[in-house]
Length: 105
Length: 172
Image 1 (tube, rainbow over the protein chains, first blue to last red):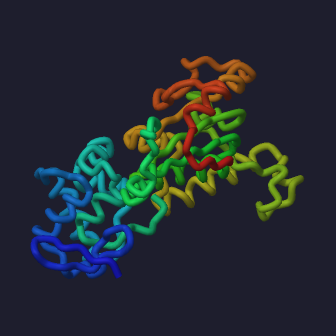
Image 2: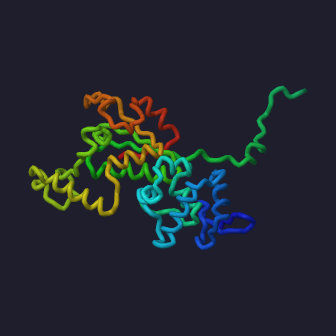
């Protein structure tokens, strides 16, 4: 199983670099994962998306639909793509420490 | 004898890990029925959401998906569609296609699946390139003004070859 070192600690990740254990997530881990996605600095908007995804995942154990994400964070989809250049499913969900979404939309 | 030709240093270039080029997919949408409109748009959107490059080429009846007057009126094919659980003669009766289409749209709304116009907006927000086929447009007597604003441009078959270079092509 591949592993990465974030904030001085080792974490097991899947082949796409997603945390294997969502419970290991913390703000520091999110900052470390942002580096792997080429995101230099996490703005308030980044955190808004990450925290919403995190909250939703912990509650329902599944990723919200993209429309739900836009509606609940109040951010237009275009901006979400600007915040997470590798896309909301890959970039944003990785930072939120959840598995890669499996849904269609 | 002194060497005059430089020999490429293969061992060195082989030791540098070469990064594969970023993945890209190209979808060709050639059908204009509601049921055949979704596959291409869903896949293009899934690609962009995963950071994979995506482009769509709309040709022949696929142009209906990006034609202002048609995009909101796509219908399920009720004639010549053996997968539909109704006999073909019934599908030909006026009003049946509209009814089946309404049922399908209702089912999709229940599952929170975006409508076709919404999908086009989502794809534009995700910078998916969307091109209309020049030849099919000429044939159907369409001008760029007839197309929805999300369309990136119009391409000939030759130009398509350049734009789709390196992409995995899927024909729908």
